[in-house]
Length: 353
Image 1 (tube, rainbow, N blue to C red):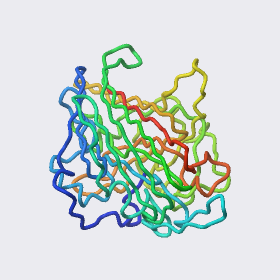
Image 2: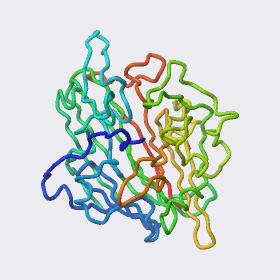
Image 3: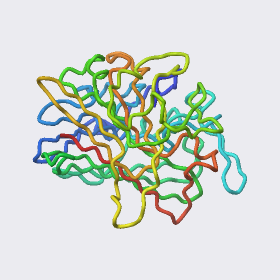
């Protein structure tokens, strides 16, 4: 979701430890290779049979001044919190860093995308990262301990063809009541030549019946739940992304909205990590497919309206599985609160074929 819009202030002069910019690679035998930087817990690159599938830069130092959260693990709260404040269950108001004035975006100016994650374990196919966010970090209460396991596994796609899957498993605990919402912020472009025109030709399918209507600053409206039926946001049948890669009076930021999914059932008959979205690029030379699975209740779809150099607007698309924007201020949204003794746990799977 538009981290570059309205000058988020995410660019900073930061000198992390040298090993924070050393890529850690993991891979599976079906040809999927992923590299991750401890700085920002960032997915620097995803390649299938040597073809890059995300917007990526080879020089890790690029990410020190990246304002678009490319590939980052964003938190403590992904997306926006209105007016950079929320009130906890005891009635205490917590003012937050207004990284996109007047709102808090992606956890503040020095949110998780700008912090160094500790590498706890690294093997050929898995990486375990940890981040300890201290009480008061960007205004959020409670010391939050986050772990993210990234694993690459062999699997098959919906047609039974060989595929590789990147599995992200987030957990978090706190010593005081707080709010948490974690996601990944990769910009996908599955074409061999990752051009704006190629992204427009991608076919997008979303398994969502509703989306959240927002005000011009991206905050959900009081009556936010809207059906996709009859709307240009109806992607229940796959259609080209290019139709929403534009800025108009009704789409001032292009497509940058949260799509609503049913709460994951606990029944063993249900898929514990259900399919949320499918993105496909096909040409005479190449066909690549991404299937997004997640336990999260929403997927923020952002078409890269504010991407800047060396990239161009509408060159990549984010599929951000997450809780709803501004949930800490909304009783009608899934709760974002985490209490001592509770375990935050969410999964995001990217399956490539």
